[in-house]
Amino acid sequence: MNTMNTMEKILVLDFGGQYNQLIARRVREQHVYAEIEAYDKITPDEIKAREYKGIILTGGPNSVYDFESPHYDHEILNLGIPILGICYGDQLLAFTAGGTVSSAENSSEYGKTKLIADEHPLFVGVPRESICWMSHTDFIAEPPEGYKTIAVTEKCPCAAMADDEHKIYGVQFHPEVTHTQYGNLILHNFLFSVCGCSGDWQVENFTEDLVAEYKEKLSGKKVLLALSGGVDSSVTALLLQRAVGDNLICVFVDHGLLRKDEGDFVERTFKGHFGINLIRIDAKELFLSRLAGVTDPETKRKIIGETFIRVFEEEAKKLGQIDILAQGTIYPDVIESGKGASAVIKSHHNVGGLPRRISFEGIAEPLRTLFKDEVRNVGTTLGLPHELVWRQPFPGPGLAVRIIGDITDEKLEALKEADAIFREAVDGAGLPHGPDQYFAVLTDLHTVGVMGDARTYGYTVALRAVSTDDFMTAEWTRLPYEVLEEASRRITNEVPGISRVVYDISSKPPATVEWE
Image 1: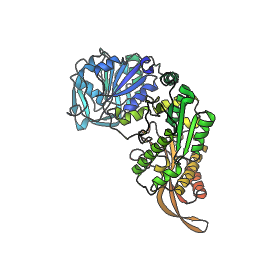
Image 2: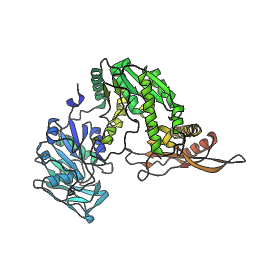
Image 3: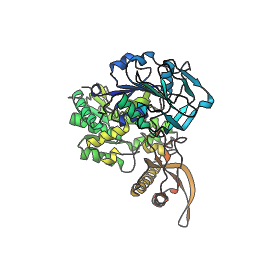
């Protein structure tokens, strides 16, 4: 059984664009399944064989005239499949079909730009004038033969083009970003009016398909999962329990770097509430001993990843024959590990490598085609508690990368308390538009303070709260002063060794959400 064969699909052909995942997510939000493939990993024949309803060509950082820039087989224009090119994808369509792409400094556009659109099926419901998001230096000076210009901007003589006969379209702007006012509507028009999609992709239905698929695939197999308590591994655990029952064994390596009381919550939820066969390993002392004196964040990550795998491996060896290793890999992990054409952003930070001394018959990654928001929906469908489904993003190395400098048990416990107080203050405020992620960081900065009549010399804690749609960019959250005041007062009064609290007002970019 393969759930992929029974649904209508859109191909997002990746030419190195930073928004490739966002395009796929926007398509899926309209209940149409989308998958990303690198331009050099799939041929026109393979595209045709997979029976895609439509193709979207992503943006990219290159010029079509650059000898080393990504290009594609002209045959894509003859497949009879509707195509929408975005930014570089638009220029590549024009170049491939014989149009003229030019580069001129005074024609560059970056940021919000007024778009003037003609009446056209792609723009049904879009006002003649609206705001779009531009990011380009090259532009289409002359559309190919058979194409017509259907939108312009002040500097771009062809902001959108159309070959209605062959259902091939290109837009110079980015409809997938929120800054383009009617971007979702434009994508909707392409998906439903042009491609003829029905919008039958429902994550709830897909959940039952996944359970049935893995019940068949893993029948009679012993399955081992490293459960961290994060959203991805938690949803994987619950889904696989539905599929294989008691043949699932979860190993929870508690490295002691989780937030306050989180380890107990994980054990209580999965072992107590769901009755999952869970083995909890208390490895805090081992992790802290290996991290002693280490200050470099990348070295911390490597030590934690390697130690995690070795502890997991030792426990797995005690369990006898295990047939399948399950992992909570999700779609962005697949893309960021090098499947797409966009640059590899980072290696997967939750895993330090597969166990070396244990042989498995296979790997099960039931969530590898899903984005994070879809994984949360699966978790809700499976009955996972709200606290786990909507758990904030949390770094794989845990609080180790929220302690600047070396890590000690004293610092770790101080940060756990400070972080819990801050989260309590934010949660208790009942904010109508609260931050998407908020936490405390223990800096390595000591400052003078006053406690009663005595001078102190304690650590400085930084509070961080950000609001974002997708974590690709993020704005610092304007928390009410009352919330910040309560958090600061309680932290300095209740947590020994902390004498000062500051609030981080950096956005991403130029900063990142995490400090390390």
